[in-house]
Amino acid sequence: MNKRKEFFISPDLDNNNLTETIECVNETGHNITLPVVKEVPLTIYLNKQEIVTAMTLGDMPDLLAVGYLLNQNMLKQNDVISEINYDEDLQVVIIRTNRQTNYEKKMEKKIRTSGCAVGTVYGDIMNDFSSIHLNPKAKIKTSWIYNISKKVNTRPSLYLKAGALHGCVLCHKDTPLIYVEDVGRHNAVDKIAGWMFLNKEEAKDKIFYTTGRLTSEMVIKTAQMGIPILISRSGFTESGVKLAKEAGLTLIGRAKGKRMIIANGIERVIFDTDTNSIKVDDAISAQRSLIN
Image: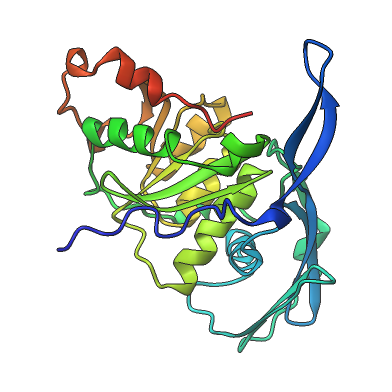
């Protein structure tokens, strides 16, 4: 199989609508100008029903809306999307499906998550969680983890331009395919979920890399997407680890430089790297963080 193109979707650094320049004062008391990212409210409709208004970076609204609905179990994998309408002036995106939908009862029970920019999941989201079966044959080499970390964290990004963002990456082996950023890590996850659905991308051989904490929400969404391996340069929460064990998800955190911690799913990990062979300078350069 031909090697897939790296980063064929990534943040648009030239999109000036995503940032705004402000005047401020630095640590020496001098006036400076600084680019900062915007927060834009995006209202998502499913057919005729308003579902949520999310605070988001403002790019890829179609992917975000589809992915959000998928990860809330409001869109099903076999649903046919007949139309996606986005009104930039109103910041509204409408997803229309062949299947009639009504989620009034489901939306009565909301759970505020630990996601930055205030994540929300609905109360019945765990009903289908126990039925998830992730690919037990998926593998990840430690050399891939080092390569992914270096490629992502040395990649030009909106974070390096303006800060205040989280990044999420969909990978095949050690090739980063899709790289997205947002003010909330849950939004970034949803963008990737939306892209996978619309492009019929297979999940069972993929690796998910995020710059944010490995919380229960991150684990749930990754498992729901059918991705068997989740990596972060940040740490875990107790609930995140517990749910990873329940779902059979390989969970790898604190992947910085030469180090990593495997909290679950070690049977998928192939240790093919002598850490002494990793140069310290390379490890340091690979740690340019996308985390605030």
